[in-house]
Amino acid sequence: MSHKKPDAQTLLLDLYSLTALRPLISLPGIAALKECLEAACARNSLRAIERYHEMFSIMSAAPRLSSEAFRDYWLYGAMTRAKLFGGDDIAISALERDLAVVQLFCRLGGKGVWESLQKTAASNPPDPITRLSAVAWSGASAEKAQQPASAPRAELTPPLWQYSGRVTSLDLCAGEDMLVLTDAFEREEDWPRLAHSLLELYQEHGDIALFSHKRMAYVSGALVPTAGSLRWPSWDEFVGLEAAQEELARRANEFVSGDHSDNLYIHGEAGLGKTSLVLAMAEALPARLIAVRASEFDDGLIKLLREAARAPMKFIVLIDDAETVPEALLAYAAFEQGENIWLIATGRKQAAFPAPARLLLEPPPLKAFTQRVMELARARGAELDYDRVQDACLDWKIDGGELTASAAIKVLGKLV
Image (cartoon, rainbow, N blue to C red; front, side, top):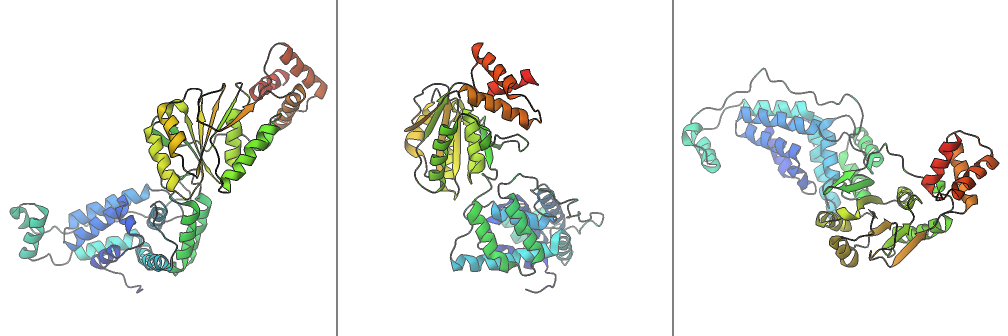
């Protein structure tokens, strides 16, 4: 492809030529780019400049993957359009051609597009017949069409398209892989050579527009990412739950390997770590987690889960407080669940949750509870005498305290 700077009409034709990446044209920033190129070709300078600045505003606010707004917006957009790519040679060839077009835009950058807009918009305006025809199609008045197009305003200057630093604005589950890919796009002069890499990244992570985070929660009718700063439990920090962990790990391995995994209901006393156990397991698995309270499970979430069922990913849906089961959850669990979605519900007591598999968590024996307090102390850098810790745990039990995970923290608080 020639390195000669194209005019707005050439850029617009290139944009229309996209095939594999055609859904990118619907992105707000690219839509604004298309509109400003169209305005420039129609000699509507003010409209072109207005849409250019709108494009800049949208792209600058988009997720940052590397260091250049234009390229980031294109590549992030490619990864957030569902089912863009197929695995056959025809799709790869189309993607290669499209990447050459995208490379042209990104090589020009925002300033180059600006110069192309000004050059085209400042050239001779169209003849009256052409202008009247355009007005007729747009529905505007003929009197307005008689007015000559305005020249670009010299005081308007192109914005700066560079970021101040290399940061990502989203905690993407595919974040590291996408940064590796954008590094490759920075180094590689021939972008079509990276078509297979882009395809592999998409096939690995699927449509990350909706499910871009590994940890999500369904709250008040919306799917939101959980805070990355929250501490998540480790699989190794549970004491006295070895049998439950072994059973949960067996089922998790079946789910990840593609075997059918039955809905699971985990029940037991408060504080034993029912939810924490599922969180720790999910953190270790190549799967996304969606957490929701049973009372909030509604048709909106079912719609999202139907989309998830079509994605090339695994999802664990953690349903807390499932002692009462709303009708929407009951219907979904019984009839609609996809093979790549695993429902795990928790509750204190037995419930009517439709789960063929049930797992009861029981308080650990005193010895295991004491060991748990000792491990918590070491994690805090405190060296405690075992006999002293054991006596404190025994006193706790005699006073009627439950031997739960949360209770171990309370006993430790009395010792340090």
